[in-house]
Image (cartoon, rainbow, N blue to C red):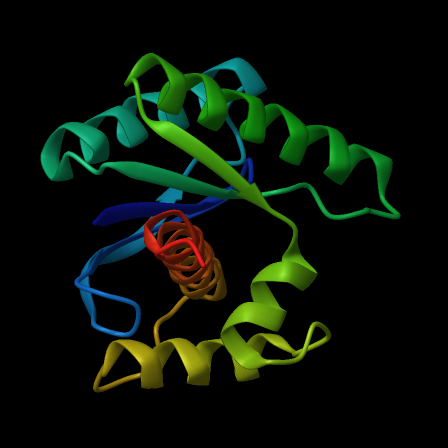
Length: 168
């Protein structure tokens, strides 16, 4: 299973590509961030996300996409820009024909760290451990995207086991 995890944002969209061979056999294929320049109009920034995400999909050919849901934001302007970026991400993934799964931040942290209120550093360290990376995955957005992909792998593996278990 090849999963593309996405942590959407207008300024920085994190991505992570993980290959899973079984429930706990992970290989990090690629990770990083898509950055759109602050001086550009929002429409151009969204196009940057679309174009670079399309290139990633073409390069890696993932089977599944996992996207972090919008977390409650106190700053309305930030929430709107993240929502716009999320919309572009979802549209790009849908146009590529990918199966899309969405997870909220607490669900991702619970799955990866065992604690729904884990901080950024805890998430980074667990992602590093699970993927056997030599260094902490940086920046935070990339680590979060890898965590979203890991979350999906766990959920999909569980669902697969339920559907393939013999009836009793």
